[in-house]
Length: 152
Image 1 (cartoon, rainbow, N blue to C red):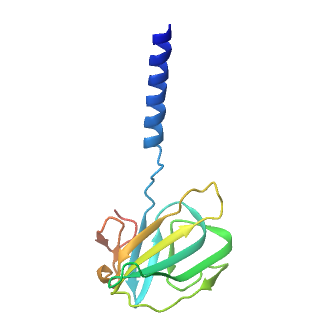
Image 2 (cartoon, rainbow, N blue to C red):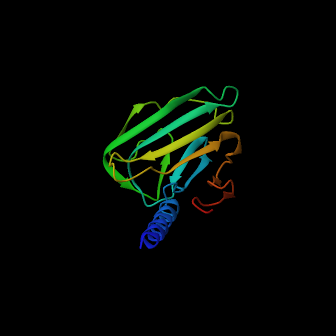
Image 3 (spheres, rainbow, N blue to C red):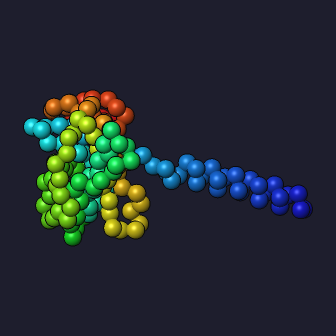
């Protein structure tokens, strides 16, 4: 009987471990970016309700020099898919940091859509090489360039 319990415990543990590993604990949250009329735009490609947007940059010359250049938050959540232009607050949002100017081509740009709801989990985020942004074209999370966002 002891052997049966051990094998049942081992089987249950293996199933739980596999479930945790496959459950999306490291879920991919897709974001796209484009350059339009010199302004960086971001597309939250997920059905994710967010109430803040953070944009940080890292200089390619000094990768340890990371700074937040824009933070916008609102009192209500906006559901995605949703597009945001850098420095333009979504309706009902306001900026508490920036927008600050920066050299797009010389920067690595990170955007993070967040929710203050603790049950939401990590929000969609993406990091983009500013030099790879093309006017009027979307740079998707997988590195592909497309005419529309969220096409991986």
